[in-house]
Image 1 (cartoon, rainbow, N blue to C red):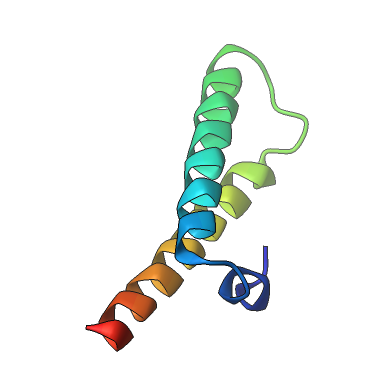
Image 2: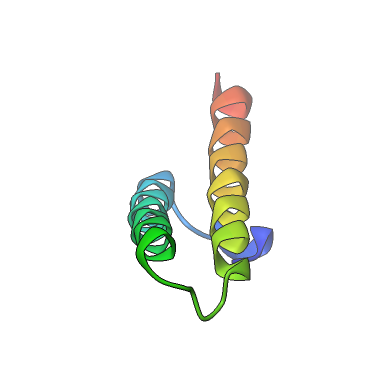
Length: 65
């Protein structure tokens, strides 16, 4: 997910997206422990997406406060 796409979302939608991404990351990590992943780079991509979303949320908090 690109930063521009994230900035178009409301803070509540971003929080929901973060929760979904964290859940998917958990599933991928669990699956990687039990079997080989078809796309191991997806773990890295999800981690970066979560960080990107949290950064944008934090930017909004600081600009409003």
